[in-house]
Image (cartoon, rainbow, N blue to C red; front, top):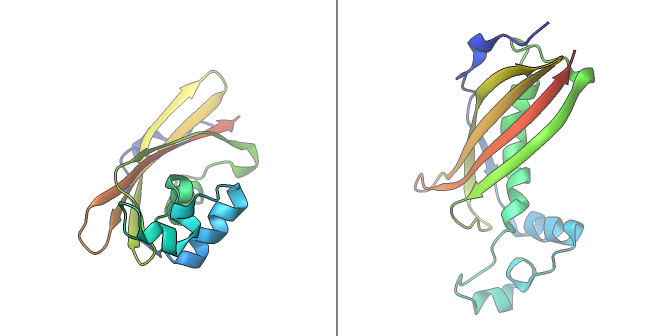
Length: 146
């Protein structure tokens, strides 16, 4: 059974994530990126950023709960045992720093079929709560085998 295209454009409630330096350091350590901009407050203070920043792919941390709303939406009724994470892409617009509160709004960007598979594309825009400036735009493609 195909995923109903009537859900294209559906928006989900915003999800907030407060970035803290411990999580930034833990993430950088976990992925093996020990860049001083992420790990060393003293060296980061001397950089053009004047303090710690998060690695760009830290976006997976602050966007995951927003995107999960699409995946687990009961109305959309995705067949989770048959779902495969197909693609994920980000556009990085601005740096994220410890102390930032990031607000991510997810939506269903597209639904289409290819052969015996459904494709559901979730989109998301992440902004700083303090000034509304965009930090990241994301797109996640889920492939559901029938």
